Length: 531
Image (cartoon, rainbow, N blue to C red; front, side, top):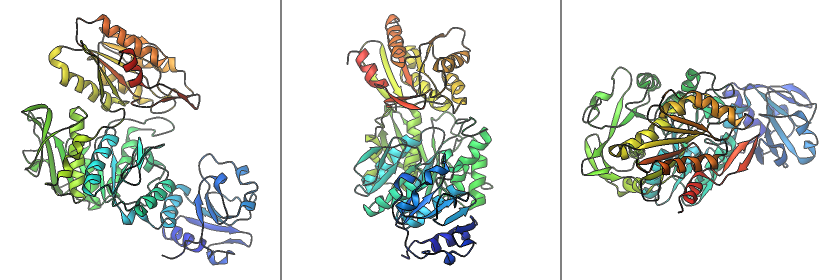
């Protein structure tokens, strides 16, 4: 592979119409060969001035202050890539670009030898279910390939098929993503499964990356705030970019805005594999999904259907284009997780796993930290811990409580808060997902950051429209959980379901810009239940 140099970097930027000019001590130019040392190999790429070493390329982005460059020439900076001239701070040449985030994604991929070309890359987007679905399809591919599947999720990262470490972002910064892809490829991985957030497209973390398979699970308003997406249209538009940047699309046949998404795929010439959870009552897609494709707005080449198993209340049956794949039962309850499983199987089949391969059943062994964790202590009380943090996921959580225990007339209690400074729409969405079905609400702390957590909780309380529902504001989260469990015990004449929503397995709260340690919802619940 040719060496990655200032010359090759400039040529790549020119091809993508990003390069404005090159600034160096000899003047301004568009010809990189004018720059001294332009053919020297770049030794490292970074967006952190603290890690600059001899021969480094530095991407100037984000909350950058020019004084960060003071003294950097003494550490051997070879070149910087930025949207502004910084020649007053450094003698290193600058590649001045229209968009440094796009440039960083393209140049990082090139620096690391385009590792995506050595992997089958699967990208998953949607308002809810990305993490669970990523774990499910990763389990199939890892089992099928003898542990040669990598994973980038909001919870964990795995680069060798065996070792899992905590993640920091749903979708890593582009430079970090390509660095980790290179590690995965060098580790012998054949597949990479990754979550793709709307922000990943908003800030160009996956710019220039084409997914072998892209999955679009669902869509509803989320992440609407001044610092994320100004409108739902913008949120959906960003998520839709996955479609035109995929070779094959996997799509929920019941997804909102389905026709628009199929039109996106048709315009880009992307074939569509669909999936659905069919309860038998309103099988709009037909027995084999044949009516689920509109020949005018996309081409369907696979349909995976999940249906309830009449012989196992917790199980389901899967078919692929009408062919039975057998009965299944997940470790994680919920019809929404059955839909996620159908999506995962559709992706695995498109990735080349035979429908008859035992690896398909790897989905039955998957559990995801903080997702649908059920805690029982006997008697008339069960506690669920789940990451549900928006309308769709909160609605699905309550749906599952009613599906599992509806015949016992459960008294449902929701304990929830919402984040500060972003995703403001979630506050109403969380309440809407339970309103009219939960009999008690406890509004509490959940990453308030610089906002007043009491004000957030009171705002959420104002969205409860059910006149019969009890509402409480208890800001310390442990106290709110304790109060909800004690309240459930006072109603021991009813079957009680307490839903602890929003934090999942997280062990910290973001308060005033800093992470503050937190015991965790499940450990607190178990302790209070004497487990």
